[in-house]
Image: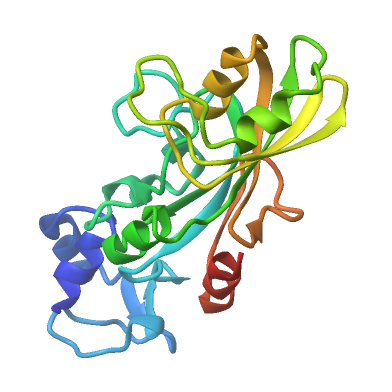
Amino acid sequence: MKLVKLIANLGYGSRKDVAAMFRQGRIADADGEVLYADDQVEHAAIRIDGEPLDPPAGLALMLHKPVGYTCSTKDPGRVVYDLLPPRFRLRSPLLSPVGRLDRDTSGLLLLTDDGALLHRIVSPKAKLGKVYEATLASDLRGDEAATFASGELMLESEKTPLAPALLETLEPRRARLTLTEGRYHQVRRMFAAVGNHVEALHRARIGGLSLQDLPSGQWRALDSTDLETLFRG
C-alpha cells in the first residue's frame, strides 16, 4: 500500500492532507530522514512530527469506559471516541466497539477494526463469559440465582428464553452476573424481570480479559498475549 493511502487510512487526514504533510517534511523515518510519498519503508519505522505511526489495520484495544459516554460516532453527547486520539474515529476500516455498553454502564469495552476478530468475539459459538457487577435498588430475595441459571427466563418482548447465567451474591444489594450472550440491556432487563432495579452497572471481564489496573477513561492496545487470554476465558 502506498504511504499516502496508508497514513490517510489511519485517520491522519485526507490523502490531500497527507500529501501536504510529505511536502512539509513532517513525515520521516526512525533516523529522522525525511520520507517521500513513493518511498518503501516498514510501518514501524515511520514517524509523523517525530512520533511513531499509529498501529496498522488489525488494531484491537481495551477501554475503561466511564459512565456518561455512549458507544457511537454520531451521538450529540459524549462518546467513547472522545477518550481516544481524535484520528482513531477516522480510521478506515472503522474502529468499532465489540458489543456495546449503554451510557449508564461503565467498565471493559473492546474496540477493533478487524472484522474477523470482532465476529469471533461476539459469535454465540465462542460462549465468552461477560462478567458484570450490579448495584441494586432492593435486597436480593435469594431465588434469583436459580431463576437466572434455569435457561427458562423470558424477557419482555423476547421470543426465546435466555441462556443460563451465573449469579453470585456479593452483598445484599450487590451481585456479580456472568452471561454468555448479549441481548439489548440484558442485565438490567433480567433484574427487572425478578422485580429489582439496577442502579449501577460495571462490566469487569470479557472471557479471560479484565481491566486490571487500567484507570477509568484510559485505553491500551491489545497484543497477541492479550487475545490469547481473552479466548482462554
